Length: 398
Image (cartoon, rainbow, N blue to C red):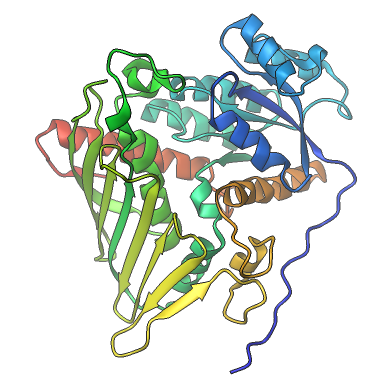
């Protein structure tokens, strides 16, 4: 069979790159550098300003070390927002990326939105439902774009899976299993302060959800992104096995959906030998699909009595659906992975930022990238799981 060739969507050419302000992510931080790499991958943005630490001197030094001009290396996010707002529109930053501890997200995001900047925020969006509600209101009251970096939604074959489900190729959905399993906590010494991410052991900064907030929310968002379903009830059981903190490092959540489907989300950071094993399986009345983050360029599709199909990431293949094609940068056979998926979230958000610059009105309810509403759902998922586990595995309504 000869497959029809399909050209990938070509990138639109713009007059100038968007100007990026980074808050957090300095020093030994991992995620701040990921944000910069992803945002600038397609040359649609340039890192222009930054406040990279809660310590003013370290903040400025880290920003300069990352290539930011000294006069735009700020001691705090307050200073950054105030100084950039005073600059002329053709010089100030366009958006702020937030790569700070979870408990600071609301204050930074709301201040940036009020000042008229777009926001790209790391997950989880915040640590309380009250903060999440405040962020939803702030986005709705602004004319700005808000994107949350659940970056796994940017993989081409995750978007292929989403379209297959939406087109009814699986029939009615009956079960979904999403897992994010790691094992790195076994390598931690409880008597040593880790080189990065020490705040994640502090419930006041991280929130009361440990591994649930760190990786469980990614699995939950992947489930929602692919299926489009929101649970009606949640039952959760969580445990702490690691000696370096008292937050959860292993847990399960059973989800009930109004449509009749059942879901299961499992998260762990104490499973030996597991690195970043995020996976999802979706069962329907006609077929099922399966995808793994560590093998991101293949999507498995099964139907009883039929040969197993393996969709490969290939923008020139006739079976590649539009959103999957648009998420590809390279021809099939050239692997694309984490950075490219992360960059797809940024690229989609950039498209909307440019629409706002052109004076268009956006519908934040209908965006492909994770929105403030997806972020609020993630916070609600965390809180329902915590409440269920605290109530000796009692069912919680959504």
